[in-house]
Length: 504
Image (spheres, helix red, strand yellow):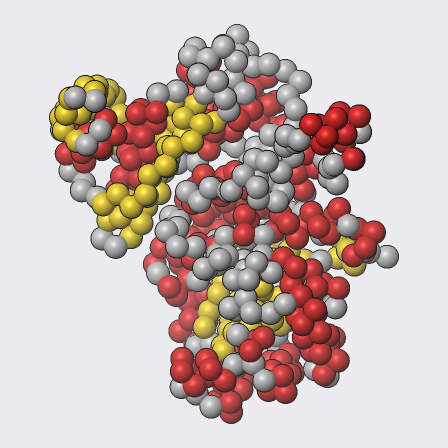
């Protein structure tokens, strides 16, 4: 009989710790809704004590998401645990995930605590968290660099104290697969009461081995895998959820393990996370990269045309990539559009949001002969998953040339007022950005700017992504249009709206 492996998604907690990523409450909730549709077992919604925004996001997720366990991270302190509980107590399946370091280097240089003190604190805080009524997960931080005998002792006492899950983190991505597999087996063989808890692992990707280490852990008895969409996370990131899930599904005959993940939702979730975080997936990324199912070699193309299994070990459809049977254009109706959204995996949209997306689809269809699935997904991501628009672009004009100083005029709607401003810049995009800053009255520092085409052809949509900094916090904005200058302007206004949303 196949063994079930629980998928613990930490995109909203560890994934948000990706450099340059900062999510607001609404963005976290939208991702959580898609994770719910994806079928993950646990959503680690955040670290409530870290900030007021994180607390509110975890609370909103606990109130609105049903089905998955909702976990909140907490250091092994009462104030952290109380804060975590206050955020997740609204969930029908709340979990407090508490941690303390157990390696010699962390205990000496970070905690300034002895082994005895760490042991005592771990027991006390697990017991306290358990008393609040939540499921409790305990993590010995930097486990793979901890002395094994001490680690075994810590795990045994926290299980006795009420830990339902013991998570083994490879915090700095130091382990190798065979080594890590033996490490998990050692825990199974030497922690006397290990059968009373679920063994989980949390692998970082510093050496590019997070997925391999996670799979090695499964082979040696791990029952839960902590991972993130697109492999997001600190430094080089975490184990990628999509790679682990599809490895178990594709090599079912080897692992004899299954998950509850609806794999046909993977591409939808991956695209949404990429859009909201502003972290684009590299083309050669396994499972969700643009080239994952592309074949350029003539030999490969010939083989695939005769039989897909010659060079494809999984189908594009199994991860949510579908070939359209209908062509949508300006004469397409709302019913056909709504059906296409469902085929693409967008099953949680309200009637109002579908109406918004349909109107944007109609606007685009007036500019393009045919609207592709990629265009439709872009519309949903950009026009539906957004914060309220306080500032709206009404008009922009550009004067630019290789021997001219670029100038721009913009008209921005703010509440019931239209504000006109003009500015000069080093190129048309810079000029537009400066004019928008003047019109909104919000000055920012541009940290990053990128453009990419959605689809191909001269009428392809342009997708602009900007990262701006305001008061030491980074905000990501995105915009789409068949005009790349307009897409850029909309991206900046989107980021500025996020600033306004947070401070008001």
